[in-house]
Image (tube, rainbow, N blue to C red; front, side, top):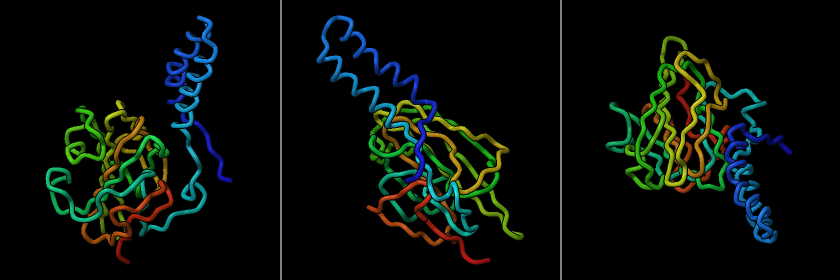
Length: 220
């Protein structure tokens, strides 16, 4: 079985979640305390960080992998008001509170820009969440031969999630499948790819971060 660790963000959240159980125990409500003890356990489980195949197997240079576990809400042309300026394809992945929330880079390259934008907390499956919610946009550039490939991906927090955690910055060099951060308690990931990339997923598909192939670059 692949090894699973717990992200460091878990411990503060779990400590806060344990307060009701501790208070119930101190006031003599033992049964209530036992029931409430499930809350910090569930919080710790939310921050689980399992190993994926990208951690151990080199990823081919033509593959774009899923950056998150979840369900594909959109796979096709970039949506007006959502996609960056220009000609893009868009893959949007919804993460429920039961999905692993560790995010990974869909492609390798050098981070050329990381832009954080504060915002609202619409449910992540709603269209307006893509441009009104708190989010972080990450731009990657990767040169193959004499051609430059650009990928943009976006961490978006949802109704329950109230914080996006981005652990890369401009100038970092990362490999396909590397961990780049997380989003807390239900969220969304958007990936924007150039038109020449052949998409490998469709609406309704399930993705596994660091394993599911989202698309392929054409052979140079």
